[in-house]
Image 1 (cartoon, rainbow, N blue to C red):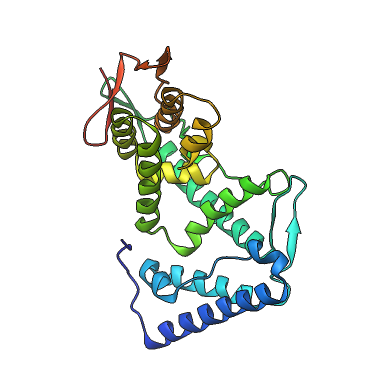
Image 2: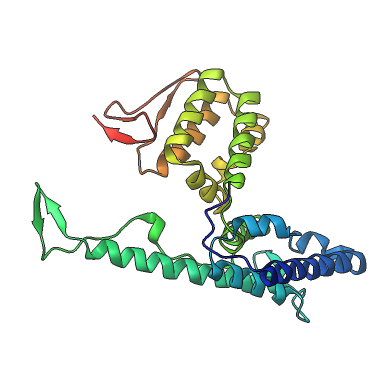
Length: 278
């Protein structure tokens, strides 16, 4: 499901976007044929139709068209390698850097807005007390290309590229379905329902972002790798559940033996996607 568009599409806009997409995809095809050894490092092809559905403002449009045009520049396909094993094209490296800078600017604005809000204690407003905006979601991001492993960079780059191409809900739907399918194949029906309810309460988009950022327990096929690695279904369930609960700063649930688990009795998931304490 695309976001509501605030852009008035002109014929020239549609034609320019289609041209940029055509050139972008054509260069990928040429490079795959000429240099098959770097095929896995090239960006994925894009669709003009999908991009148009996700573009919600003139700023989105200008940013995407500029990014697509950048890949046509000479040397954009050059491969850069980090000390930790990460590899990518010069183009993607620059795009991720830009996305990180934009995200950090947005986080700073939100953090400043939160810090400026008055603090209420016992229903009374304290104007001279400043709020500490300590939300983990507002801490600055860092590219850390040199330190990242190949998998870590791929996850991080994919996460940041979503801010370039638009955050379509179709990503969330595919991710949620992949998780549920893997859970059903390896866990009990009760465990699957608990995980579904918790992920929906936390927010599928938030879980997806955590997965892209490198949270291994929220990888759809995490359950397969650990099941065949010898872990019990209950142990795997507890790890996934705790990863989800951590996104809302809730305490871990505890495993007892091989077949049982329990929640902290003072805190539980509430209905309709909200969390509360007793």
